[in-house]
Length: 308
Image (cartoon, rainbow, N blue to C red; front, side, top):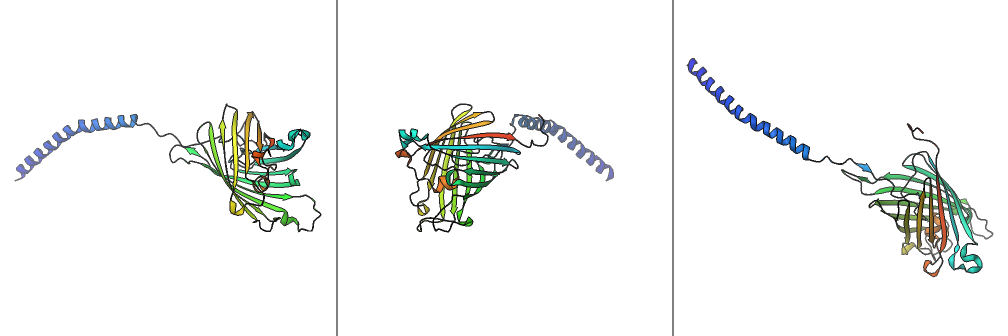
């Protein structure tokens, strides 16, 4: 039986060798085909952050999602003349003026702090901005950018009435979620859910909390200029007596380290307390303030590894 077993084993081995020899070319062809498919399949683009949704930390009156780069100090001058319908005697508002001077500093690429002083109400204000999300492209893209904003403002005017105006009652707090998307290279849009809390209200029927929904956008018209629009809609249930929705339209002009913003608005104030909860001008009746913002950036602390 042994010779027969070895003879049988030899036949089986021959058959296996024959089958492997037939399969080898097919396997080689499959490997070549897979290689060709891998070469033809385009590589997925990398995930990249979307930059320059807006050119300034301000849209017109309110903030944008933008924060300066780490170590950047921003000096901001905001200016408003009087209303256009104040007549020729006041040179259509140019004889009158209000101003806010502000300093903003980026502690990191995401975190910014700022302070300012307004002639309206002789108000001092401070704020914190944190960029929580950044719009990206590529795999698992983030569709929007999100920046959280919080501020406090203190009116320092002197009063001779009998109303309790101690320090805590003079404070006003503002909170915003700034949500923006750069739709394409020319168009950016932003929505701004807003809460303004006033510790002191002058009308007993008015609520301390004022809710508003801001919407705005930027449309580039040249490489360095754009048209900006901004509108804050006050929620009717908490709308203060006699207060109107803030409307603004403007033109941005970028010149290197400066951004000039020319605009018209029905709000005289330049902080959230003023333009959200205290705007009383009727834009369509000529209660229009012409104004401008001037932004100047200074690099105070270069990032690590930076060389001139």
